[in-house]
Length: 352
Image 1 (cartoon, one colour):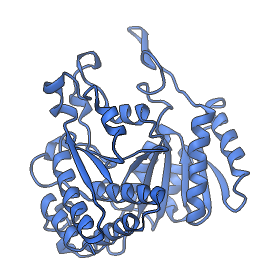
Image 2: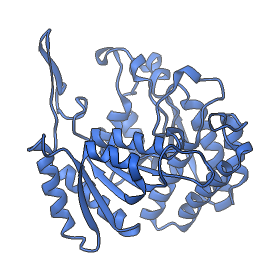
Image 3: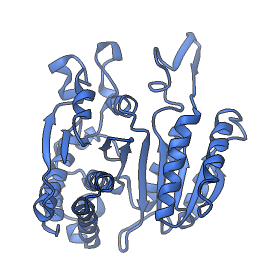
């Protein structure tokens, strides 16, 4: 399996390096034959090529089986015409990584802020309310006068059908329930189209239960009792917000894996940001990036019919659970003693 390694900004180099330590242990234990290509992206690439996204980067990614994508400090980037490119959005749109898959689950013995949960949020990632991914030219956000700002939302039948179908396929392997989250009482056309398509796709999966919940109510229900939800299917911005909420309720953003997946390629990327305030201090929790890498192995292994890749993914997840179960082998943000590097080494030792 050929992996493109892009460490990104802020704490990215630290959490990606900890993840590589774990992957190398999984490779040794399961004979995966992982092959790595290393490139700069983000602020490290800017002085090299004048852009945070090197011009050949998407083509390089296409030549690999998967990507380890570090976080992004886009608030520190210059304007786009000076090379400041949101590389996360560029990957999702340019490589058609339409499904942002974000699990959230509680773990025994680990502090949490909500109820027990084991759910997956399926977030459509190539369109919606984000102005950098809903126009073929120009921006979807603009100011016709200095006192008026406008933003466009794009929802297409084809994009919704893909994320809906993936949601139902996933639910068939889990507890058989999909929750479609929307705001069709206000966005009658865009969220109305979303619901129309999801209902149509649901007809092909009679063994999966479909329920529909307004996004504001969904936020409250996750706080009240997240255990009742299985697979949540929704549009881009709703999924972005709800996944952060679910992950924080389950124990924290640092524990939440995330995969950007398309038909032929996927990128593992931690759900959290670049945390520049703690960069270089060995304080970052690499769990999210490690779990994202495990999701990437499972995704590619499933498509290739590779039992070793799937087994390695499970071994990584089990090693994470075992490490988090003991206070002394947790990272400092969870009351433990370990820094970023030491936690990666700890997880790697438990890989079997």
